[in-house]
Length: 101
Figure 1 (cartoon, rainbow, N blue to C red):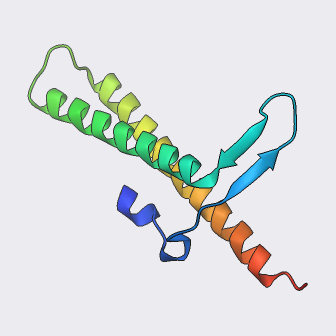
Figure 2: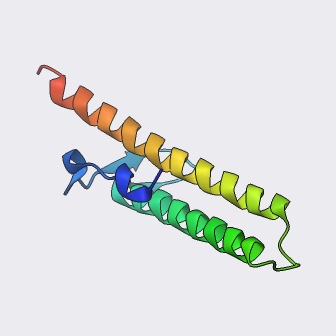
């Protein structure tokens, strides 16, 4: 799965903030920042996994197959997390838009 497949035209230009009232995290949470962080983490994990695979394929003695597999699984989890965040946000947006006032 590629990070480009995570973006959605329905979320283009959407910027939402939510007030959190609690002692743990006072202030605002920016939905766009959450998406950006999830995508950035997924991108970095994919890049790390690709570098590890290339180093292993070139015969680098410091790179074992287990490290390649761990990096690959981390990238897979990061992309799945970013996709889940996007899907949940879209689901919430659609539910709000379908709510009758």
